[in-house]
Length: 443
Image 1 (tube, rainbow, N blue to C red):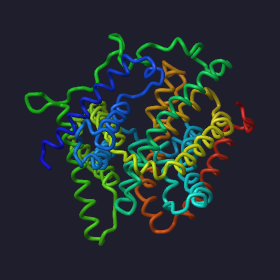
Image 2 (image 1 turned 90 degrees about the horizontal axis):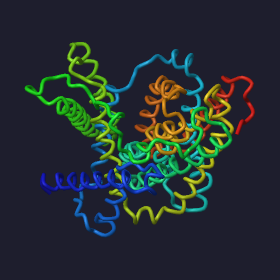
Image 3 (image 1 turned 120 degrees about the horizontal axis):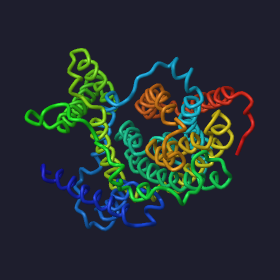
Image 4 (image 1 turned 45 degrees about the vertical axis):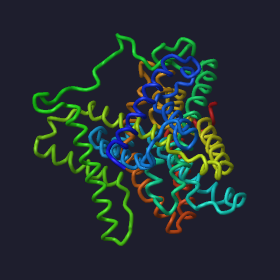
């Protein structure tokens, strides 16, 4: 292997991402599904790559890129998230926090319970952690799938292909299911701002912004006579991810093989770097939007490489239990939409619930995409509420992603399944109580 092999992998994927963006901009059926270019590129990479037709000669390193890229994404989180107090979250956006936190825990717990109680009886020999593939794919997306797979490591290498498959299916479920819900709700007059689904702006379908809608992707904080601003931000994230990997490897050596995922270390290192920069005043050279763009680029590559690295043989071996797990998860989320989410929100019930469905099946970007359809001008304040609730939820998710695989491998699958499900049900009850007088479903 040489540096050219890595570069050619990036070059091929860069070409596929450009083709994916072109397909999104010109092919009406793809526009109707609102498919992101990264997903299209990943599917093309899987079909044309060594696993299927062998047209694109990806190197054997392709399966390792997701672990590297997820460290970059998590290393960027401290630089892009807004810190708020838990007290402020509970006071201002209690319903959004409760619905989001309850749904997140429910996916982890329900997936484990369904796998342990039902799927393992039907399909013998399933790993105890198989049920984690529901949340790792649906709620978590390709990033969480990569993180969970890294947690299992060599103990269960099939987790990567299954997680990425679940995440890919989750995006389709988010788009197709979300649009179906929007159409039904708009016809019944449940949407506050969308009168006719056919009136959606063209740029939402094509993915290409009109001239009047274009805006800067960041601000220059340093002179290009010194260093390009984009390179500065990318260098900081690269250094954080590299340090996280070295610390993770060192920790494994000194503990005799105990694993602490690099992505979790990257989040901690990123927070420490940000604290040091703020203490010394060096944070004046940072721009959060530029950091967002670097992180977003890493996420696009993560999705594309993750899908392209899926092993069809692994998916074929597990396809029946995986299909049942995902169908069970979808039924759970539709039940939650009708009987928990909508009754829990005081106003803009459809807008906030549609956003919740999108991100609970296809990650936050899919939730935002659906929200922009029902609330183009963001007048429902859904993202403001979610932004306030995001910090404690995200911190909890990082802990779960980092330790759930290890705990399952250690034999704690059943206690985790019961405990997470019970916690989710308690938070769901709290969500309903917050909106007194709305205990009954309002479909």
